[in-house]
Image (tube, rainbow, N blue to C red; front, side, top):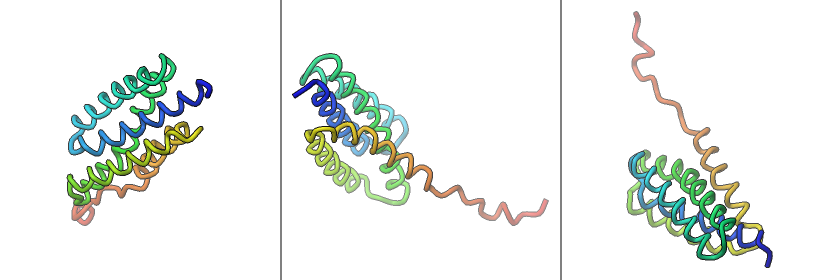
Length: 139
């Protein structure tokens, strides 16, 4: 297989690592920042483990985009009352599926594009803050 295949595999595995860490370390922005940094580091390590510097860059970028894309879903679920352990379990299962799909040719590249796009779409659909009784107050 060509180098393009291994870059895609590393990028897809990086996305899976980012999704997993976002699910496990969700709760605060500091924990999600730590998940982002860990996902980049582990993605680079996966890339170096499977190839050379180009695969490492793919893994690092995939890790960052996976953590960013999953963070919106995880934080929204927790904000709406989801249990931390339950979210971690389901996001972990999703990360396993993403890792398995990453081995399909070109699928890793699609994962790198689709996971952050899903997070951006969820961010756009989030309800705005409710003004409450302040909108009824007369000045």
